[in-house]
Length: 312
Length: 320
Image 1 (cartoon, rainbow over the protein chains, first blue to last red):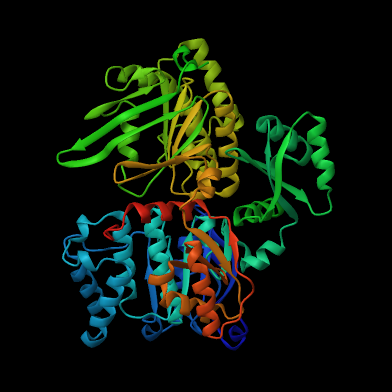
Image 2: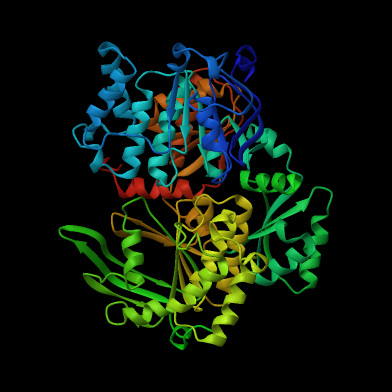
């Protein structure tokens, strides 16, 4: 981590705003992204993830605020800068009638990649993405996960310094999702800065830094350690003889939003200054048998929910 | 409220269920029971046969062979009765965006043939559940996604089905709405409704009482999330914490054929491996001069289990 002090931020965004008519897609986003890390932008549909990434890619202009990418104001950046940015949109335009290999060739020529650079790079990308066996298959006949991986290969054929990925794993099964992350880990090793947007909280926990985006605002940003330190509760996993009754009772004591049911387990968030044994005896007084109670780490979703509640 | 038939025996009972399309076997001889009031998760990679199974269980398509009994009715013989006894909700909420919530519910109560009194009662129940009583005359398309989702759920259970099928119900919804959606699901299940759900959100699968994993049309595992995490033969997950995480991560990735999957969570390294390989990892890192805190075993996520199961099911390497 100490080396990151020496590196300049790849992205510096201050007060970024984007309006589409009456709709405020981004309402004053501040964001800085260090170079050489994977930074996840997490949020539900409509949070502003796509708009943010499009502006960072220089293909959409903001209506307010400052956006510096790779040291330059992205709006006025020359093509030489834009050529260093790779962008993968949600609806990536693979040519369905071309084969896997032909699609990669097409993007290589689009970005002006020389043959001597292209051949070894394409080979490696196909290997990592496990598409090597499908070189001659038409894109139209690939599964959803394979199309996503091919799109990523195409976006990577010109060795970008900054890679922007808009929800590359949405609707993709966990195996293909892991393979995509394998590719991202390789990029990390090569020093590429990656910004990846996702609706999946558990996936975002893989990233070095995380920004939670909600209704056009960056609610919090930081690594998991920092985000966890903001959590003002201790999370416990509770298993009881009567989970429904325990759920109701806990919700009455702690409040609805502090309690949730996961199959046969209940998660309860107890304030740091509150007394766990008081809570336990409260349940027992209601005749609820506690089979087990253990401390668990809060997930990103728990933290997100707290921050949303704070933000009102 | 559920049909009497359901009160005895499982809500869903599937035996030797098979569906072929030409020479492709989409669902291959699967069997399982779902208990009444259970939240049953149905997981698998894209193309594993999840949707085909759900479509058979809802009576939309007929199996090639085998049998399924849903709410006491045979999917081969009584598909019309099944449609009246089941609710279905998918991620593409089947709501008319240019109608109001009230009009949408009115439309669905017509589809289900609810009589006047019951119709009014159920519509007001659904509006209340969705938190839309005061917004019942707004345009549906203008509502936040979380409200649309709860409205879609209301529409799917308007006719009080004993079994509810949810196909990736919470994709793209914010975490608060997702939580309150799951609270509603648990309320329905505690009132006796059986919930059958597919999802790609592994953290969402944690909400289920039991989970069935299917791959290439076959059922490969069925158990509760907590039991799955304790099963023998699964890969274990170990967490490695070191200041030199970049170096350690690069070193381990070079050897991943030998050690297994390596992933990064922030700056913590997760190793998915068989316990007997741990010593080799430790001595390898030490020989490379990497210092690290003691390696701890951590609870696997359902995603770890999913990947571990599929890896052992599929050693051919052609998975995509």
